[in-house]
Image (cartoon, rainbow, N blue to C red; front, side, top):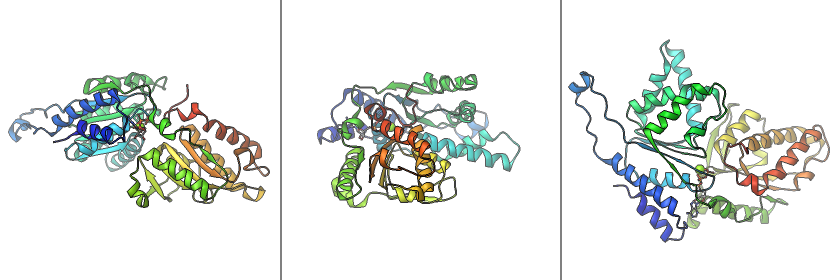
Length: 373
Ligand SMILES: Nc1ncnc2c1ncn2[C@@H]1O[C@H](COP(=O)(O)OP(=O)(O)OP(=O)(O)O)[C@@H](O)[C@H]1O
Ligand SMILES: [Mg+2]
C-alpha cells in the first residue's frame, strides 16, 4: 500500500522539507490516486471483451501545475516512487515526445496504416501509469498529434500524472494552428484532475540561497562552492556524495556524452567535454531540453587560436538561454573577459550579455523551457 502522504510527512519531520500546506494537499490527492491504482482491477472477461465490452475507465490522473520551484516534481517523484502499480513509467515530457516521433516514423516505414494507434498500444503496453515531468507544448508537430495519441492511451486504460508550469488551457498558447491542439486540452481536463501547486515559495531559489552562479577562477575554491550548491539543489544525502550517478546522453550528432554527475535534472559538464569536441547546436539543444540546470566547470580565457571553442561556447549558451536552463559556472574570468580578441568577438558580445542576464534573480526564477513573457 502506497504511503505518499506518510512519506511526505516523514521528510518534513526530518527537516528535509519545510511544511507546506499546498504540497500536503497535493500529497493527499496523490495518495488517493495511488490507492485507486493499487486496488484490483475488474477487467471484463474474455467473452465480454469479445462481445465488445470496453476496458474499465482508468483512474483519473492528476495534472499539477504552478510556478517554478514549488515542489511539483518533488511531490510527483515521491508518489511515483511509492505507488505500487506495474508497469509504471516516469519520463520528461520532451524526451517522451522525441521517442513518440521516432516510433511514428518507424511505424510508417513498416506499414501504410495510421501509426498513432499502434504507437499508443506500444506505449500503453509498457505503462499503466505514465508520469510526465514538465509538460509543455511548443512544437506544431507535437501539438498536431497529442489529442489522438492521448485519446488512444486513455482508451488503453493508462493513467496520466503530469507536472507543468502552465494550466492545460494555456498549453501551446498562441501556437500555430492551435485548433488542432484544443481537443487535447478538453481531454486532459476530462481524464485528469487539474490542481495548482503555486505557493509563495520558490524552494529552488531558496536552496540556491543567493549562492554565486559564476565562480572565478577555476580551482579548488570554485569546485568546493559548486559542489555544495549541487548537493543543496539535488537534496543528495551526505553519506552518498562519493557516488553520484553518472549518465550517458545520446546526442543528435551520433555521439554519446558522458555526464559525470547527473541528478534530478541537474548535470555537471566540463568545458573541455562540451566545447573542445566537434559538437553543434543540435547537441546543445538536446542538453538544454534534458536538464533544467547545468554546472559547467573549467571555462578558460580564450584567444584567437580558440575560435572554434569560442563559437561552440556561443552555441551552447544560446541553447541554454533559449530553454531557460540555469547555469552555474567556474571560469578563469568574468564573462566580459572570456574572449577578448579573435574571430566572432562581435557575436560573443551577445553571449556575454546573456551570461550576465543568466545570473540575474529574474532569470533564475524562470521555469525550464518557459519564455519570460
Ligand atoms: N517544502 C519544501 N521544503 C524545502 N525544499 C523543498 C520543498 N519543496 C520542494 N523543495 C525543493 O525545492 C527544489 C525545487 O522543487 P521541484 O524541483 O520539485 O520544483 P518544481 O515545482 O518541479 O519546479 P519547476 O517548475 O521549475 O520544475 C527541489 O530541490 C526540492 O527538493
Ligand atoms: Mg519540476
